[in-house]
Length: 227
Image (cartoon, rainbow, N blue to C red):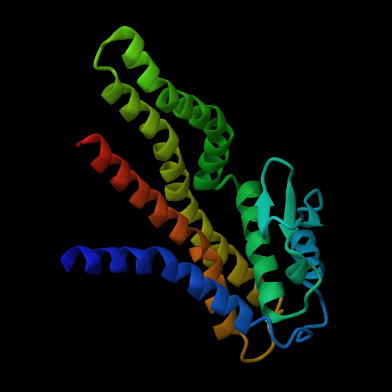
């Protein structure tokens, strides 16, 4: 019974934030034409105000994000073209990341470097996990534990490190950058700041579920190798 309760609590912790984020975004996506400018226009206006003329804006089908390598703010179609409170607030959040990049915000710098490195590291870790049984069979040595540990650390540990750097980056983009910008340029309609705060919190918490899942995967992996 205790195990069932623990599983339910873990599932709620992993799934709950994602469901809440979707609910908040959907709620403030209506009415669709609340603002005169679209998310893309707001993003451009904010970038120009900050002197970040070199940062481009694009529509994407891969989710709202700022690409620090390509120097581009990318918004999903509903936020790029939309004129809802969600659209302009999400646009401001992504511009917040562009501002972090321009100011050399350290967690974003470290996260960007880690993302570049993580691909080869994860491939190496996956290869070690795949080769472990064959190595043991050929060498007749108890290396599988070591190879499994190193492979799991490389594949799961790097992802967890990225998530650890992502959370402070997201909250700073929301409340240290985006909200002050929206206030300074007086872009929010009267009574909309509370909703914008909820949206910015949702944008910052987008990665919480992924972070919790990453930690859960590490716990499962650790339990397996200790058997």
